[in-house]
Length: 470
Image (cartoon, rainbow, N blue to C red; front, side, top):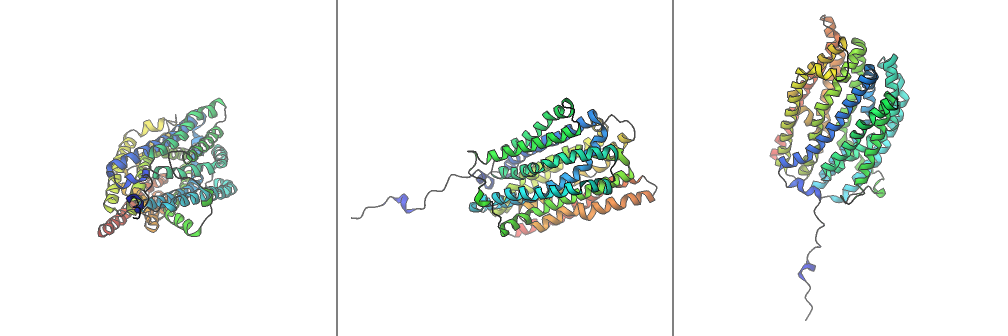
């Protein structure tokens, strides 16, 4: 009589242990969004706090014009970050979708492509910026005197370590999508805390001023990257950056670039807007107006970073469930994210409307024209904040579900369709009406936000109808 084999040998081998990402398709959406968003929000807020502390040190301890100099170079740094978002968000969205589809064989290949692209593309970008830096600062932005000196010093140094600054946030997205949002938060917090601790040492104790702030930025970005790479060589994940996957394939590279194109072009457009905006502010308002606008953007960062945290927390949830064809969970996650964003934006609106004087005084001791412009900037630029959550989340929604065309249109509507024309033409219109033209620059922001929110709402409504049909 033939020997009977155990029943267990007649079935397929047992599956590997569940991945941390499996819970994204099962746990209640509200709990998931909280568990993914709160660590991201904390990380973002600590980073925003660094930016504020950095500018307080420079404004109160060095020179208020140092704030203007740092503000002048932000568009250059945004270009580098645009390429980081192009690769990091594009690869991460594809990563989350493949996890939801259970196509785990492609995941490490996506990571390998992202690592290589995050090194090569920003490095080329940095060389180009260094070549054109002086002509843009002097000839286009019309910077001179102390403002130019501060700007050039800060930019040259931070560009030396900008590859670290691009790779660290670009690769951190994978930690969150791997089901470990708290670890992702730790990476962000470590870099920001290093900035806050080292800033007074380099700026004051070593007497390096603006150069000290720049060197601290480089050091903290490098340390953050070390932590990211450490995670992917730890027991907490089965995923690794493997050399065999760091060979670019045209098809996969194209998918990453296509999905990441929307946040990239939005960030790139923001850098272009920054150049035009700074040129217009210097033309119509001078150094005081530029300082005031830079202070506003430091405050705006505190308000905006929770939106980024919510978006980063929602993205892997939306992407995974879209890949798993659980469309009700996709819609519920997006709606909860919109509600949370609206709450943060409304809070920010009231703070900037009623405490703008106090916020300005944190950065500068000026009590004259600079203070007046600073208060006015905050109040005008945040005047429609309670209405714009759909605009901020719309682009991230389409990125998460892998629809780059819609994501690009929604993301670009504010910058290209509305904000750039408004910055160019509204100061001229205000001048003809006998109103200070600098006010036209300020009003360009809320008008653009409102118009872009309408377009975002239309696109999201149409997509929700399509999901309902599916």
